[in-house]
Image 1: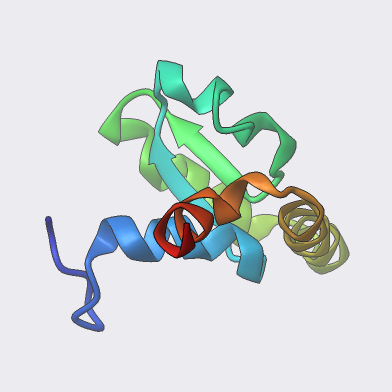
Image 2: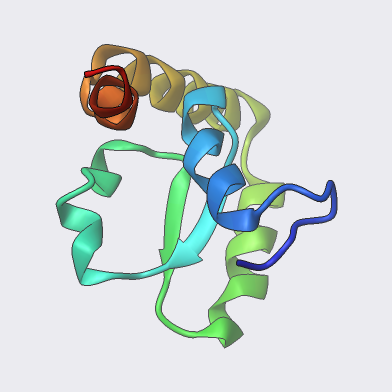
Length: 93
């Protein structure tokens, strides 16, 4: 797995970002629907690498209140959802 700038595996960091309200720019995947990605307004899928720059520019140009509203909504959605604890429960079982 690739390492992010802080030395943490990028896949792991990506999984923890939405609960923190952080914006995530990720590959558009068919599996995204199974994860409820559309419910998280801070997860922005891209279909080609060329689109990433435009997505980042869109996030940076976003009205600060809209950005905050999206961050709060994503964090609240993740808190309400119970599915992100499935791995923890499997380990504890």
